[in-house]
Length: 406
Ligand code: NAD
Image (cartoon, rainbow, N blue to C red; front, side, top):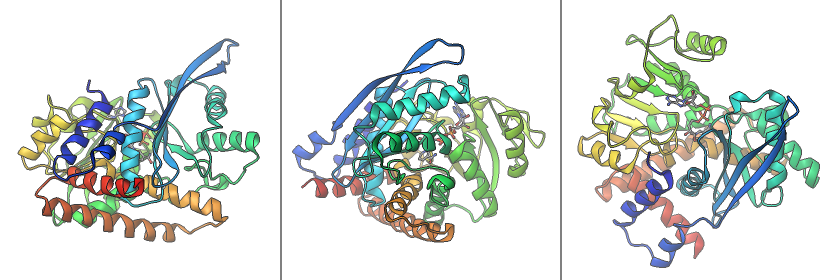
């Protein structure tokens, strides 16, 4: 398995080959400002004590407070968190929001914890990090396996310790705890605005067949949004299996099935197949919305899509990128495609600081303006430099970060 941080550095090398940046800047941007490992003791329901490993990487704050989600996953480690923090710094610069890049995590399979154990773990993470996070320092958010409820526990713990109950320390909270309208769907919605802005340039048909890997926060919302817009979601998957129906899946019924059974597999409205086969399903648009390193050197040649829109972070390795470019498959990179999440997170932070509450319509109008503007700017940069969209997005982001660091 590729080390995601090495992938990130390789992407950096490729992008900075095209445009000149100062050598001091390039040296600095390869290293996080700070990375933290903490031990989080949790009293388990059976009375035993278990110690979990937690992380926070604060990559770069030249453009504003560190910003980035917290991942709970059994395979999470500091290298993964470092890569995700690096991508966050670039992502915030891509959408030009006043935030830097950070990321957090805990090595844990949260599905093996009871609700009370999960609450203790979440509060424990915040207790360990309370000195290094804060509305003007570092503002975490949800990521894989972390929910609005977990954000609410963390915000509450921060408020109890520091007395700051504005909620602006963390985003992705439930509405009743100061969350923003539209945050739940923001990542998928932002990806959709990017898709709409670039659809014609990328020579995609008016009605696309869509395949989505992952049916969690990003993937499930994407399935609903693309379906509502008249496209056909023909296959999707989760960690337990995949489902397809070439006439288009009934996504509302699939969501009901997932809620009842915990997986998309076994849904009566389609044919269940191996999750590992999903990426090879023929389609117009493939949306990886699960984990990193899914499209690799060993499987990229089997993809049968015209465009990949990366809602997941780091789903494509640099070697796979080369293969896709050679075959004319366009990749809309993660740092643009999934930046809707952090953009609405930043709206939430702003609303908390100003004690305001914006309507969903207001949130999505602002989001659409940003996503369309930056998607078109990246497309134009790629065209001018005769390069791919990832390199173009990296260059725009790095130029903005370098300017701020100066
Ligand atoms: P989630 O935990 O809600 O969902 C993840 C989904 O991926 C689940 O359906 C899970 O079963 C599935 N999955 C895991 N391993 C899989 C595999 N091997 N094959 C197929 N499916 C698999 O997480 P999420 O928040 O939807 O995040 C998904 C991706 O999107 C991550 O890379 C995350 O960093 C990225 N992302 C999320 C947000 C957000 O706002 N949620 C924002 C930006 C980026």
